[in-house]
Image 1: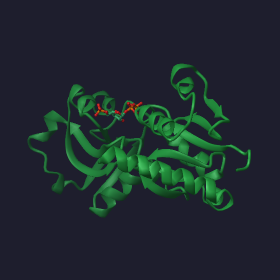
Image 2 (image 1 turned 90 degrees about the vertical axis):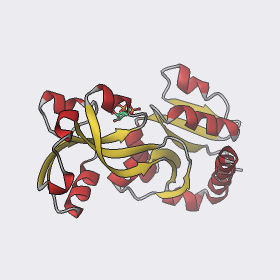
Image 3 (image 1 turned 120 degrees about the horizontal axis):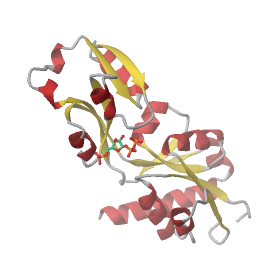
Length: 218
Ligand code: PRP
């Protein structure tokens, strides 16, 4: 084994706990440093791994450019960004759904099949445009970076496209789901060049992670 560390990009937020647990189970040490301090990098020379803590949307960028050899990203983000990365493993956690939602007052006399034009606030402009153009509906996308559920109440857009996990954020902001666009889970992604140049170590990590994911499922 070379001394070079394998760099792993982990997403802050809802997928962090499961990500830390998974890498701890396969032998990484000291990952609580990323949870309990403001550190954004942690090197564990014993396991030969270096961890970067990133916003989830930035993980594919780090991996595509090779600043990280591998990382964990939501399938929603991968589809939205279309980055050129290898995606060997569905990690099974971080399940959520991407949906179209609207204010509950609109729901009663609203038939989505009759829409010809919609204005949508979302963090997912590409998926949103593809979804509506496949249905022949003209869409105006208002790109936001968070608190999407606020947009209808504030009069920015009538409808939104956003992630739903427990459904609490929708409900507490007076919104209801109109249709589901896709389901998403956390995926392991790998830099294509790293896979070739560090094949044995990266393949070893993928295999151990896959084993663990299988064990958790059974
Ligand atoms: C995500 C998503 C929803 C919420 C859904 O936002 O965009 O707003 O979680 O979760 P729930 O169905 O369990 O309520 P996030 O917490 O990532 O914050 P953001 O608004 O800054 O994007």
